[in-house]
Image 1: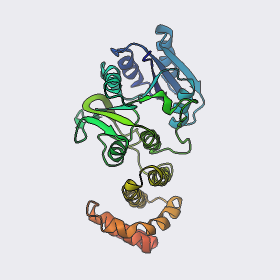
Image 2: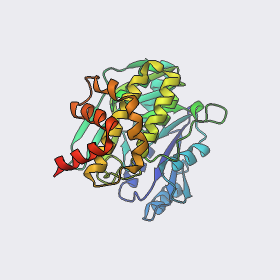
Image 3: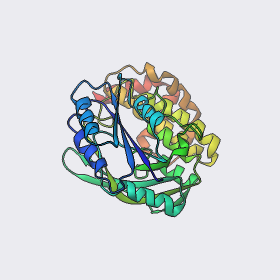
Image 4: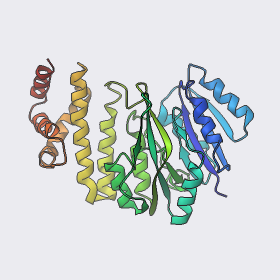
Length: 322
């Protein structure tokens, strides 16, 4: 039947939602349902979504209290009826042939997940094409490695098309962790990849990812951002279970993000108690991290210092900042 369910969480997106939805309605593959999950918007987003639903039977709007992007996506997954699942963010947009091309890739490769490239759309108007090293049909462990190590393939859910078996009650019923505010999509992508047989990848940039100060990548440090570290710990557990040969890579990412989060907190003058447990935990990984040459030297030094004395590390960074 090749019906696709496309899920878009919507929160206060009145400036970008029209462009996003129109890009989906313009898809050359027309057999889809578009699920707009209004996550308690306080601007005009709900009215914009409702207007689209009144004009196109493929559009459904679900209004919910504000509970975050993971809950919104899970709400959409619970209602999705398609054979395939796609996601988009309300400030982004897709090329007209994106879903037709992803579907063709799935069918030609006999794959479970299809992945395309994307363009970063910055406020200054520049575009950066993100691409992994090769276009190919990948094994699960090859794709998993790319998800961990490249932004090009990425742990994003919006440049991918999944078979519904990953999310359906009769299948794996994978869901987004509703306690996470950062990196929740990488965790879901990796859970899907760990259960896939084949993954099709094409670097052609068919998705436009908008980067501006208001989105997750642009916001300053907050305790909510520190949930990234919990996601990284869960990723270590998943990797050790499914792809133990990649465990060191997952551990390396965890240490990098502990150091980065610590530095962000210090520079912002914020309390680091929210990552106290992580500052202790990296003692287990600090030495292997230090000797891994691919890591930034300053981070390697900071990882060792944090494993010895977070208090001293904080004092030194504050002094350097002055």
